[in-house]
Every structure is written in structure tokens, then in C-alpha cells.
Amino acid sequence: MNKILSPFLTSPSTVCFSQVNQEPIASIEGLIAGKFEKIPPSSVVKQLALAIENGKKFSSMKDLLASSTSSSPIRDRAERSISAMKLLMLGGKDERIASDLGVDDNFTVLMQLLFDSGESFLNRNGDIDSAGIAATAFPRDLHAAPPESLVPKLSEIIGNFSTLKKMALFWCSVVAELRRIWSEEKHIYGIPLDDIPDLDCCLLYQQLQVINCCVSRKRRRAIAIESLDCSVMGESPNSQKSDGTNNTTSPILYARLSTGELIRRLGADRPSDNLVMLETGEPIYFPATQEGPLLTEDLIKETEEFVLQTGSVGAGCSHLLSDMQAFKAANPGCILEDFVRWHSPPDWTDSEESIEGDDFFDGNDASPRRGMLSKRMQKEGNLWLHLWETAKPVPAVKQAPLFDEDLAVDGILGTLEGIQPVELFKQLFVSLLGVGLVVAEGTLSADENFSKLFYECKDFIMRTCQGSINEKAQDLCQVYDTVEAMLLRPEEVLKALRQNPEGVSPKGNQSKNQGFVRIPSLLFGGKDRSPRTPQSKSGQGPEEKTPRTGQAIKSFFRGKSSIFSRNSPKGGCVSSHNGSVSRSEFSWLVI
Image (cartoon, rainbow, N blue to C red; front, side, top):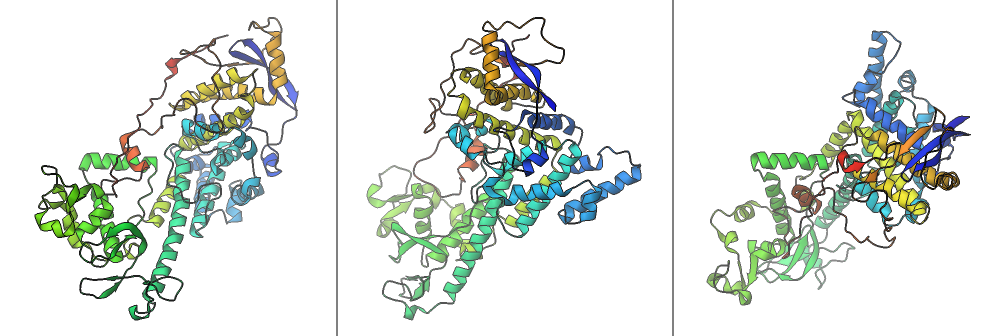
């Protein structure tokens, strides 16, 4: 029998917990048996909070393993450190090494449950769905991982281990499994298959998104190369039908030059709606282009610093040149004006739209083409003109890749192997908080007895996590305790509320073992503020959330835009950044 804390109210915003006996669910064994609470247990959240504090002592997970406390002599510890490194390299396949390090059969079972069991493992999707829009918005406010993803499940597993050493060993096994999955070009379950990194989520989730996206890109490229090779080996122009295709399932497309010669189109994606090449009159086809880089928030920061220090835009030039080569391959007989009309419409105007004195040449020599380029495009030494003259007609799949998936994923896996323990545990901790609050909101937001107190807890957790949590993890655990009590033991909380309607702490019956949880009273509302209206499950709340990553450079990459990317006539706007809230912005009701 273990003792847990039972709540009773001591003031309108302060909950005191007395200890009662209750049989707990076994931790690791319970997870393996499929037994888990409605929300992640507060004991698991506290374990991760302790891991954050203790993890500060180590520079990396490898350092943690090498420095794990042991009664063995120094030589034995060195040998164990070497074994840990071998385990990383061998992906946990050497049973003797794993046994020496304390890796037991539970590790193998947990790995299978985490990566191979699908939705059945730690499935709280029903409760998550009932939270409506909060299931998506709140974890992003925390800069956590989505509640239904793999990261919170990993968090709950690691939080159930009793020592930092076992946490680190399991993490090493996870990284080894990720490396195996990547080598087999499989997707990671619980992560979107082909989404660019979500900069509002934690870095670990972004990195897993990159891995899955790289798998999808490699598969697409293999299919595209096979299709192009089959097309090149297809029938000659003389065998094509009147509609420009041959009798095979994959059509072979041709463009007629001004000389009348038919040239095969390579890498053509689809025809444009109303664009034709100015010199030949042939329809313009959109080319299949190379996909842009996949940048996580740390890489965006590095890129920003590099651009600010050097002023270099070399990567943008490479992408522009790649697009030009793909366009030439898909549109034989094209000229720069054709490319500009597709790639940067604002730099082209039709003759009838030209107004004297605007930013375009009068176009006397271009009148047969019924349009003209902007002045910047016709200036001497223009970069676009120089790149166009350099570009060769090469379809995107045959070009040197602008983004090397193998190099990118190897870099991510190397980063995950050597990650700082405190950085890993903070992401796992916050992601687990997000799951608990999302699941609880589906029940407590509609409960008139608890909604006000719940939203005070939620507001505090959200604002605290938007700043540094290094010194506030224990405060967050205390608030999470209260949410757990309201959700799992509502009768006891209600009884405590009725026994202490004025919020007076009972005297003479408090044991020394009682714990106290203090719920923050926000300065802008205080304990007397009215309950917040829950967000609609079908739409946004009354206020639009400001993205966490509001800096210009992040918005720049979020839209997959570039100064050399295809332009539309209308530009977007950049969101402003919400600053984090410091501890001084909260007042506490002290007992």
C-alpha cells in the first residue's frame, strides 16, 4: 500500500492534501499490461521534474551514462561507459552488453509497444477529442508535442523509471530504434508522415517530423526517377497520338520549337491554366521542382545568425537556379520572360496594362510579346538573367539535391544521442503536462464546481511554460496535483469545499505529513475574477492566439518562403511575438 494525497480546500485558491491509503497501479508493469490512468499520474510528472533538476549536472546523455553512480571500481565504471557506447552503436542488439548495463526484457517490450503497437498503447484519443480545439491549441501554447503523438507516450514511459540511469538507457534504446527505422526507410508511428516541422511544438517533435518527412521525400524521389526513366525509354514522337500522348499509361509530352522540331518535355507536372510560351505559342507546363529545406527551430536560428553575419543568400540562388533548370526541361523553347511570368508574376505586366511612368520599360521592342519585364529584371548584371544563361534543362529529380535527407537525419540522430539531459527532460515534462491538461479540460471545463479553479491552473501552467521552467518545475507539479485531484477524486474535493466554504484552514487536525499545494492568483484577475469561458470545440475562441514563434525569420521559414521563391501578387503579414511572463507577474496566496 502506498499513500497518496487527498485534497481539501484551505482558501479559495489553496488546496491542502492529506494522506490516505490507496493501491497504486504498477508503473512499468502497468504500462506493459495496458493499465494507465485517465491522465498521466502526477508521480510520473514529478519524476520528470526531478530528472530536470538532476540532469543539469551532465552535459549529455553519454556523460550521464558514463558518470552513473556505482559502487564498482573506476575501471569497472570505465568499462560500463564503453559498453554504453557499444549499445548505442549496435542499436541494443548485443544482449550481453545490454545485460551489463541493466537493460532488461521490459525495455524490449516497451520499445515494441511504443513503435509497433499503433494507437492501442496509452490511447487517450477519446478524451483528447472531447477537449475540442484545446487539444490542438494548448500544447502549442506550451511549446510541447501534440497529445496524440509519440512524444507524450515516450514521456510517460521515461517518467516511470526510478533512476536517471534507466531513463538514459531507455533513451539510448529509443535513438537506436530511430536509427534502425530510418535505415529501413520506414515512418515513425505517431508522427505526421509528410509535414514540415511545426515551430510551435517542441524541438524533439520537430526533429521527428523531419525524419518522417525525409522518408516520404526519398520514396517520392524514387518513384519520380523510375517514372522519368520509363518516360525517356518510351516511344518516339512519331508514335504519339493527336492529343500529344502515346499509348502507354504514363503520357509522354512534347513541345514544338519555332523551327517545328518536337522536343520531349521532362519533369513536367501539369499544364498552366492560361500561360503559353511567348516565342513558340506552346502551353507552359509547371515543372516538378525540388522541395525546400526542412528547418527546425535550432537550424533556423543558425541560419538567421549566418545571414546576419555574412549577408549571404547563396542557398536562395541555388534554389532559383534549380527551378530554372526544371522549368527549361519541362518547357523546351522557353525564354526568361516565360519563367518570370510563372515564377514571379509581379515582375511581368501585359502591354495593355502598362502605364507610362510606372516601374516597367515602355516595351517597344517587346510589343510582339504583348508584355514586358520590370526594370529590376532588365538591369545590367541582373542575377536572374545571369542564372538563366547558366541554367541547363535538367529535371528536378536528376539534379544534385538541394537538401540531403541522409545528411539531415544523420545529424538529427547524432544530436539526439548527445542531447543534454535537462533539455530532453524539459521537453518530455512539458509534453506530459499538455496531455494531462487537455484530457482534464474535456471534463472539468464543463463542471461548474471546478471550471474556475481548473482554468486558473491552466493559465498558470501556460504562462510559466512560456518562460524558463528550470526553477519552476516543482510549482508546476503542485498545480498539476490539483488538476489530477479534481479529475480523479472530485467527491473528495467537493467535500473539502463544502467543509471549508470560507476558505478557512482547519485547525488542530493537520498532521505534519500534510502537503500544501498553492494555486496562483493572477495579478490581472486575482482570486475574485470570473470564470473564463471555455473555447468552442468547433472553432476558435474569442481571441486569436499569437504564435510562439513570431520572429520575422521564423515566419519567413514557416511559410516556406524565400526571396527567390515563387511570388504571388499579394504578400503575407508577420505575426507579432508574445513575450514570456516572468515569475513576478504572479501573486501567491500563502498559507
